[in-house]
Image: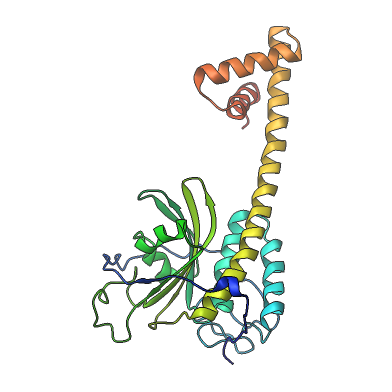
Length: 285
């Protein structure tokens, strides 16, 4: 049963298509897939990666996301995204759900792109797409100005820019979706297919809806991590203040001022300095 959804929201029209451009193909060697375990869905009989074998819920092009209509499928996806305990877990969940939900998608990956040439892949569905992500994709830069970009190879593979146009061998189409933009950094979810022109307007619109859920879940996970880090920082700084009070015979305000002064002089984060001080007498980190 094909992934067929009806999306009528007018704000998703006007998705730019970027012609394929020649690019150096990455090497064939790739590191072992370090992605998180497959994300379970009702009736799932296989892994969530591209080409996974699942009798109850097939995965890949032409597959159905559990037979759900779009709204219900996105609701299930949102729950799974928010169930992830860390931001990294959220991204691993996102790439597997992207393969299941986006019409035409066979592979997916998430990359963090710096202004200029810097980039790193932080989640991927399989080794093929991980290897493809080694080379910066020229169409990523368009995501500074548009939330969705499609790269379409031609039908025959013989036209201008067809040879080596995609970032990896065997890939013929890409749908790049902006998850978030932070100053000079982009977080990008890219879906890939091994057939030309795999991503139509419906895929782009479903992708926009899906990435809204991913972005919200990612922001929530990041906020939880930052809160936990702040609590740990508060605890370790409090311990360091206590150590200075005992060693130097000073009150808490003077101990804190001493920490701040040393932190600024040595250009070291206050938490790192406090952690170092706490670790010295106790032999722990």
